[in-house]
Image 1 (tube, helix red, strand yellow):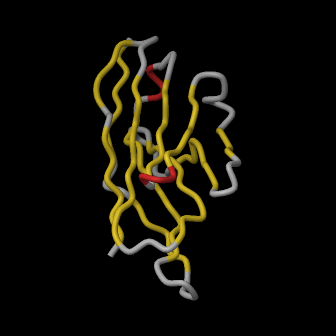
Image 2 (cartoon, helix red, strand yellow):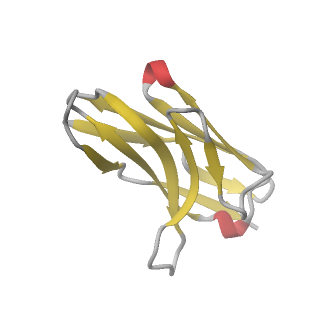
Image 3 (tube, rainbow, N blue to C red):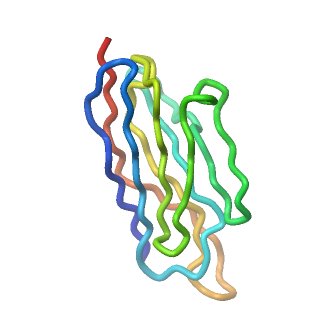
Length: 122
């Protein structure tokens, strides 16, 4: 069984910073990518924020480029999202997502964390 555990959310003032962490645990053979989505209040769809692949490539949404960075600690199966210069519009529930293969020749599945709340006050 695979679990994604998120941490680091909270309430900050505009211009502040937060660092989110997502640790994957369980029977993991390989992780193709780990990333972050967010769902803002009133939105029905989760927005892709950042993705980090096992090849070391990353992708950031235009709305967060220059402010957010994504990184990983492969030994810990953990991905981080450093969020700087936070804006009220960054307020959302942030979800960790990972595509994980649990068996050597098995399929890949998408796993989701429970979400962590980020609130940015004006």
